[in-house]
Image 1 (spheres, helix red, strand yellow):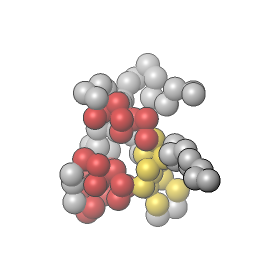
Image 2 (cartoon, helix red, strand yellow):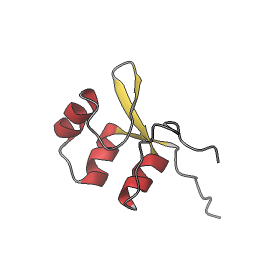
Image 3 (cartoon, rainbow, N blue to C red):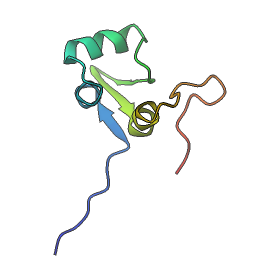
Image 4 (tube, rainbow, N blue to C red):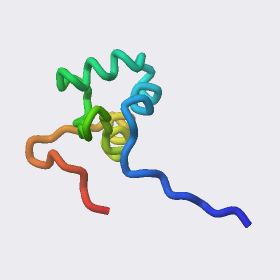
Length: 74
């Protein structure tokens, strides 16, 4: 019997880069200079983004908002 594993709430910067069609180094540079169209989370040397923000951008919506910078609770 197959089990369905739910998608993680976060994506690595490498996954974000692949999703947006960017080179890994470009995605890291954009994240470092806060120019990605999505906010990022830093954990040591690792960089992550919320999957929900990536999906919003892909739908043509804004992931960043001054009124609501954090992802909505599910």
